[in-house]
Amino acid sequence: MKSHTHYLWLNTKNRYDIVNITPQVEDAVEKSKIKEGLCLVNSMHITSAVFINDNESGLNQDFLQWVEKLAPYGKEKYRHNLTGEDNGDAHLKRTIMGREVVVAVTNGKLDFGPWEEIFYGEFDGQRRKRVLIKIIGE
Amino acid sequence: MKSHTHYLWLNTKNRYDIVNITPQVEDAVEKSKIKEGLCLVNSMHITSAVFINDNESGLNQDFLQWVEKLAPYGKEKYRHNLTGEDNGDAHLKRTIMGREVVVAVTNGKLDFGPWEEIFYGEFDGQRRKRVLIKIIGE
Amino acid sequence: MKSHTHYLWLNTKNRYDIVNITPQVEDAVEKSKIKEGLCLVNSMHITSAVFINDNESGLNQDFLQWVEKLAPYGKEKYRHNLTGEDNGDAHLKRTIMGREVVVAVTNGKLDFGPWEEIFYGEFDGQRRKRVLIKIIGE
Image 1: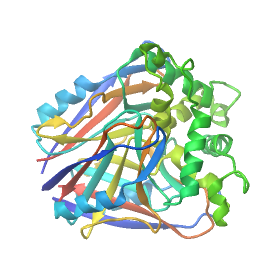
Image 2: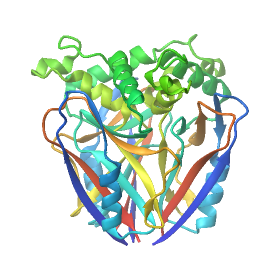
Image 3: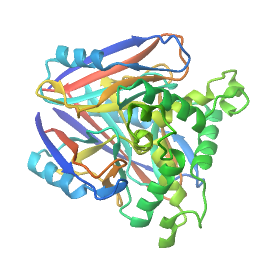
């Protein structure tokens, strides 16, 4: 069994943002030289997400608006913010979008359907954060 | 390490639908001859889901009604629909239900609790779509 | 390839509860003697969740309050409860929080960011339930 680990650094310009990280994950799969296996991609932070969806900017705006509706920002809204933080909403928003994805690697490539791409969803950004990419297989 | 990949085609009669795919996943695990490992099952489309829950038809109706409440259908409701689509809601609904599941394989079987079964959740159906099943292990 | 399987039993005092299970998962990883691989942790029940977030009690209360808002308890609210159950809400709540997590194992440890810890989310508790921990790798 082979394995390959890569840490990807991100620093978004906006507090709330969505970034396409498909090329970086494809690079890591290529470097791993793994032909058949599984690729885990996860946020290493608890206020950001990794998810798979369509590479369409309107949809990304829909996602940001929708999580704001389901888990609105508000310093007074969450007990977590009594710790001095104001990012209680970000923990909830990321829970909807998901911490991680697992993607099959087949014939040395991410085994994707026609529109699947991998995104980093940031809900408390403007600082350096990490995504972990781990591929195991043969 | 062994691996086995299977593509499962589905075409639901309804736009919104939930289909039990446990038997097809069990078949793939058996064909893989893998005794200990991990089994990934994911939708290859971005408007449908794969999730694990109870095989109870009332609950499936509850799920469909609930995601409609959290992410209602509406041609005018989503920026994504400015592309000419009307399935903005489906991208959000599938995000709640989940793109994928990872299941342990132990002694050659899906290592399930008493009520766990695997479902395909369709939110923009009535056309051919694919689910990927990938098992790795030994 | 090596693999290690561990079943963790839990019995929460409250119907709705969140329990930190990080130490038990760390133990299983150590016992597995796996240095590089993937660790799956999933609820074996369909009314409870496994998720990763911050070990902060205020946030855990926020989570419980939030899922109650998105999927409120109610004997009359869900078709599933026509079966005689009253836990329809628990199936939905666990869907938001997630059935499972997959964590990278690197240098023999859970490869976590600074604040990541693993939690069991119970939405129909006060009885014995199981979490599965499966590690594969080398």
